[in-house]
Structures are given as structure tokens and as C-alpha cells.
Image 1 (cartoon, protein in one colour):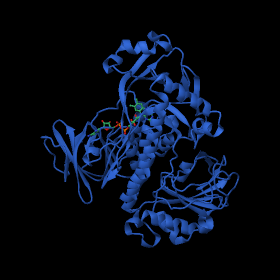
Image 2 (cartoon, rainbow, N blue to C red; image 1 turned 45 degrees about the vertical axis):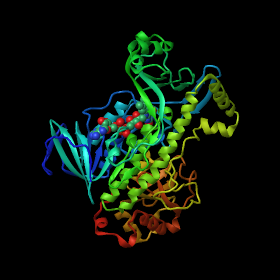
Image 3 (cartoon, rainbow, N blue to C red; image 1 turned 135 degrees about the vertical axis):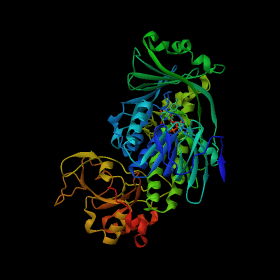
Image 4 (cartoon, rainbow, N blue to C red; image 1 turned 90 degrees about the vertical axis):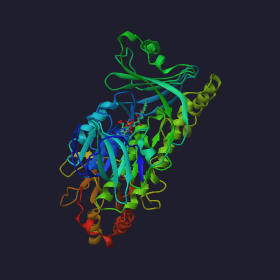
Length: 563
Ligand SMILES: Cc1cc2nc3c(=O)[nH]c(=O)nc-3n(C[C@H](O)[C@H](O)[C@H](O)COP(=O)(O)OP(=O)(O)OC[C@H]3O[C@@H](n4cnc5c(N)ncnc54)[C@H](O)[C@@H]3O)c2cc1C
């Protein structure tokens, strides 16, 4: 079936290399990623890290510079870590707290975001173009990655074992590329989404917002504040590079052109000091939406990022949700392409990601109601109740300690059903802590786990407990065996893959000594149990992937072990 628009542009024969703005385009790849925004970039980097031949295309020729995402949480930073991006690689400001302020009641709510979780600050602000630059530099280091800027997807057809995509590569030329899988990370107006017949569901917010980024602010703040004035709610926050951002809700009758005018922006910023001294970098009016698709995939085509879900930014989770998509999807694609897992695991992408993305959108809608009450009476009641609720410790923790944030734990998906007898949660992400290698070097524990599947022995060396057939099958499926020792425990002789748990995150925080767990490349816990059962735990995990011990295929035999 032919889908999408056709142009009269001159087609290029399949297999004829085509020169794009950034090099020769291949005619066949494993994965074609449409959209080189932040989500497409992370997807391309994660796939390339797994050795997948990936091509990412974008109709734009450069990084989009308008003001957009500004906040990232610890989960997002951990996914960027997975993509090889360290915190120091791009500029961030750690946010100690978020305060909610009412003109009549004063401060009525506060979120504590001081400190770190899973090895990263709980909340930072950042400069989106800086992060995108960093991701693009990273991708360019991989030979298996191709980048085609100024190249627009026009259409694709899905065949039995591949997708054929037609690109407009400029100067009236088209290029056809054959890919085993296609990922649409092509943003809120996604053509890929339309071509697979997925419409956005959910309501569009009636409110338009003016976003202003400025530098040289006379009285800078070090946190995020929501000024919840029903006449004009204003989220306001610090950002890297001496920047601050304001988001001004438009009132009925206010028009975009007028609000984006210099005079109007200066008037709105006046309460924050001498506007003449400020450098207004960017300003744009956005209409916020809250929408998701009914399915994140169809056949060989997957949706990720804003192409699959869009949310108002009140909890700063739009891009973060896209990064979760990337982490969830990329290793599954890589494992299927490289013959380490059966294609059925790809069905769990939608199953795992869609409910969580929707829960985050619901939270953003709830926050929207707090930020923008419709009138003075509703504002007084809502904010008064919020203030009162802080007197109840349980309710206070829900909000102040962010317990209200939906946990990234799957109800259904690619993990072995059942509850752990420990504090590990199957289908949830393994916590991260600092670990020390036998040579004394330290790192975050995800680095110790490597890029593949990990079998962790907590406080026990698993080599003696794992039968050899299972150990070999696990290695063929891209698995590594890791030993996490309690602090001070030493193996004799010392082994490179043995790590001390420096801050007790794992023992006694999570598990007792003598426990084992299988963890996916995206750090989701697949299975766990006592080390005496480790062979069964691994076999059941491999069966889930479609690579049981007894039926390892030649493709699996030759698969590389990535540690
Ligand atoms: C004002 C505002 C504030 C925000 N604040 C936050 C925040 O604090 N935290 C947060 O997590 N999120 C926030 N977000 C959301 C966040 O910015 C988006 O979720 C994120 O940028 C989406 O990234 P993406 O890669 O999915 O899509 P995009 O960045 O939109 O990238 C899509 C790319 O696809 C390309 N493309 C489209 N069609 C085609 C085609 N046919 N062929 C080739 N290329 C194509 C486009 O050129 C574009 O480069 C905010 C958004 C806004 C508007």
C-alpha cells in the first residue's frame, strides 16, 4: 500500500548513492529515523551505540532555536547517560525547589528538588539547542550512523520484511531508502503518524502562552516559581547561561502578534527590573496540547517523542517522555535486528510506554488546573486547599517530595510476572548508585552494567551457580555477568567485573547478599531471585526475549557480545 504524498521530483534509482547536505546517503539501513530533534537524535545515538546501521533525516538544515524544553529530571539525565552524554557535556542549573505562589495567599505549595536520585540531580534546567548540539556531535562519532539534513520524508510503503521510504533530498531530487524499521520522531505534526493512520486523541488547551527567554536579569532567581495569578499565571525559572524564562498565559482577546512585539514583552518583564539592561533572546507564542495516539507502533513503524504524545509543559515532561520512548525502543530494535531476540518483543514498546506517557499528561493537566484557575474564587479555594493539605504529612509528601509523579514501572510488558521478595520491582528501573572497580576507579553503576543485558550477582560471584549452557546462551544474547559487592568485599583473585556498592544503594538498600537479578539494557528489571536459582532466572528471562537456551539459532551464535 502506498502511503503519503508524492511529488513530481525526479526519483533516484535504488542503490545509487545520493549526496545530501551532509554526505552520501545509503540506500539500505537497519533503521530510518525521521526527525533529528532531541528525541530522534537520542534514538539515533542509542541505536548507533548498539552497532545498528541507522540513518536519521530531517527536513531542517540546522538545530531549531526557538524556546522549548527547559527542564529535565533525573530519569532524563540517566537516559542521556545511557546515550553517552555526561552531565558536564552540556550546561545545566540544578533547581533546589519549585515554589507555587498566589497573590492572595502567598506561597501555598513547594516541591523539594534539592539533591540527587539515581546518580543525577532531581531537576535541572538546560538550554535545548546546547543539548541538541551535544547529541549531534556524539552521533557523528559513529561510522554506522548517517545523517541527512535538508531531507524530508515524503512517503513510505511497508513490505513484508522492510519499509521503503521516499525522501526529498533537495534540488528537486528524491532518494529511496530501504529500512528494516522506521521510527517517526518527526514532532507534533508528524507525517509518519498520519501515514500509519494514528490520530492524536485528547483535548487541545484553549490557552496560548508567550514564552520569553532573557539574559542579564537584574534580580536573578535560583529556582522555579509558578506565579498562580488567575488573571495571568506566570511560570518563571532560572536557566543556564545567565538566562531566565517566563511563560505568560494570554488573556482572551490577546493576539499572538501583539504579544510577541518588543513593546509588549518589555511591559510584561517590567516587574522583574530594568528591562533596558536585559537581553531578550527569544520569544514565541505556543498553544499547549495534551494528546496521545492509540498505538505507538504499526507493523515496522514506530512513533516516539512528540509524534506519539504531546503535553503541556507544566511538569516539564514532554521531552523527558520522548527520552523514555528512546530508551525503551532502541535496545529492542537492536536486539531483534542483531538476532538476539524475537520480533515479538517490539510489541511491548507500546504496551510499556503508552500508559506511562498518558499518566504524565494527566499529571500535567492537573498541574495546569493549579497554575491557571479560571477565576479568583476557584483560585482561592484550590490554592487554600493546597496550603491546608501541607499540614497532612502524607499529602505533603505526595506533592513536596514528588510522590505524585507517576513511577516508571510497567504493569505489563517484557519482564517476568510476579513480585520480588526484596525491594526490587520487576518491570521498574533498577536504582543507580556509585560503584568502585578493583583498580580503585569509581563510576555510576549503569556504566558497570555495560550496554547489554546484565545478570547481577549481589554480594555473590555467580560463576559457580550458573550452569554452563545457560551462561553461554546468556552471553550469545548479549548478556554480561556482573558482581556487585557490598562495600569492602573483595573477590580473590580480583575480577574486572566486580564492583563495590559504595553508598549502599543495592545492599542493604534493595536486596540482601546472595540475590541475583537480570536487567535489560534500558535498566528495567526483568527477573530476580536467590542466587541458588540463577540458572532458572536467566533461562526464564531468555525465554521472554524469544531466545531460550535450547533453541539458540546460528544468528544468535554469531551475535557479538557487547560488554
Ligand atoms: C514552550 C515549551 C516548553 C517546554 N518545556 C519542556 C520542559 O521543560 N521539559 C520537557 O521535557 N519538555 C518540554 N517541552 C516539550 C519539548 O520541547 C518537546 O517534547 C521536544 O522538543 C520534542 O522533541 P521531538 O524530537 O519529539 O520533536 P521535535 O523537536 O519537534 O523534532 C521533530 C523534527 O522532525 C523534523 N521533521 C518533521 N517532519 C519531517 C519530515 N516529514 N521529514 C523529515 N523531518 C521532519 C522537524 O524538522 C524536527 O526537527 C516544552 C515545549 C514547549 C513548546
